[in-house]
Image 1: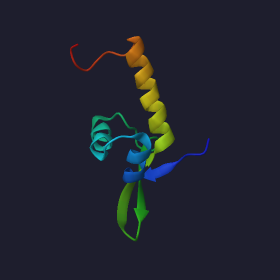
Image 2 (image 1 turned 60 degrees about the horizontal axis):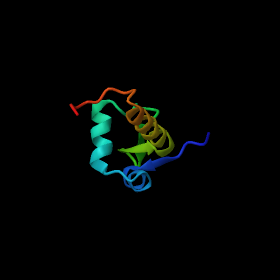
Image 3 (image 1 turned 180 degrees about the vertical axis):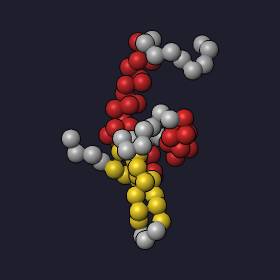
Length: 78
């Protein structure tokens, strides 16, 4: 499978998410380094985070199906 790595801006546009959501998911451990995102060196010594759009889309689909089926415990009370 061809991995599609994109900047946060492009990933947000493609996935219809906010940049804040990507950051929150990273901090919560929902996105795994090397699978869902990675740090890359651009323009000398500056590091940027790029996101694997396909892997994140699969994760979103997985959670949507499990949430719908009730197989995944909710983080909040109904």
